[in-house]
Length: 453
Ligand code: SAM
Ligand code: SF4
Image 1 (cartoon, rainbow, N blue to C red):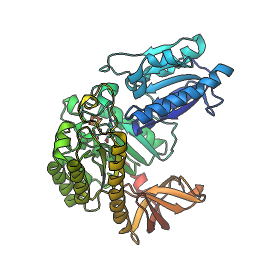
Image 2: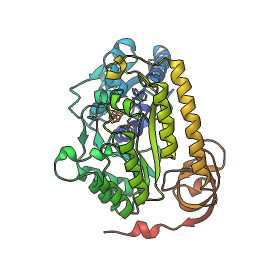
Image 3: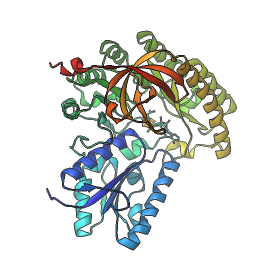
Image 4: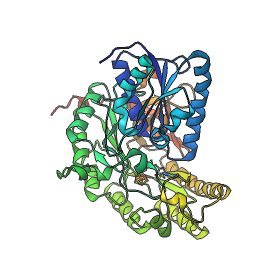
């Protein structure tokens, strides 16, 4: 392995998987002797990109352009564009931007550290493209992370579902589960490094293990991760309503370390649209899962994803979605207006909805869901929750943020010395996105942490 004293910065866009990939790349480069620095001074900038919506790609393109000015005057930074947009745009990025020297899709990030060193030393340009069924992963756990107390761990790559609006299967490739032993080893390494909470990631975690054909499924993995000594909490995302099974609910009910929080994207409240989306379930099927979840885990929080303005969506479909939101009473919904992605079936469907109309529908949906989220949070006032303080609050000096087991973000007054602490927090106020609270007591969790098996 070469050892270089180049400096670098990482810009991460998009989902938690990108955060995970960015942290692993950071770890790998630092282990090779690279030094992380400010993005405007760095010899190289790694941009981890997202293609899920057109807006995400435009943001990155303008950022690449901004680095172009620096590159022309100072000869740096060299850019490595990696992730979904790199796979989607491919060599086009190299043709358009002389500052881009490495382009690698999400399945080839194992090659990126060598490619970057070659680009720096030998001025080579590398386009790492291959059959998306191949997988050249990076075998460094994300040890040098943006957050010391919590970490993401990808348990499966890619997706085979081909929802008609979604670009993920084309850029992230076929579904491949990581070996259970590899995942458990990584979780143990992270815990040894001080991590208290891990979130298991996959585009469809419920399909975990099916491709390994060993009878070891997602609920088995969840239980085994929960048994890792000194780990406090296990979370997971994203679940798929078609594949979500009862054994996962049972594992959640039986293992106290598995947090009672589920992100279960519904995408639409109209069965007609769900069919056109190729989601493989109806609103009624979805309702049954929610019912079972709430019966088994009364405190569970359920969040969802929703697309508004899918091609052909009528006013009646929109009404179905509004009714569905009232019935399901989600804790939170990540809403988006439909963004046509070239190469996906929905982009060529008739009756595309004009942007202005999508915006109008999105604001109606958001207004309703905001009121539901607010109502759900408001009833938590006065209650006491166990909160792991894991970061500074996004705004407001002297404020920290943490999460309840149900994944609600709670803001409390506090200082740096309290980070990484588990405490009992009384909720004093609520908005639709946040809870506000005061610390009642700190919890000594050394007992939990000392347990060894
Ligand atoms: N695999 C998960 C699932 O099945 O829902 C989520 C994956 S996707 C990365 C995250 C969210 O992006 C989706 O739930 C969907 O709501 C949204 N999304 C995907 N493609 C989109 C598109 N073309 N336009 C708008 N939103 C989109
Ligand atoms: Fe995209 Fe559907 Fe796969 Fe989720 S399940 S990543 S929405 S294709």
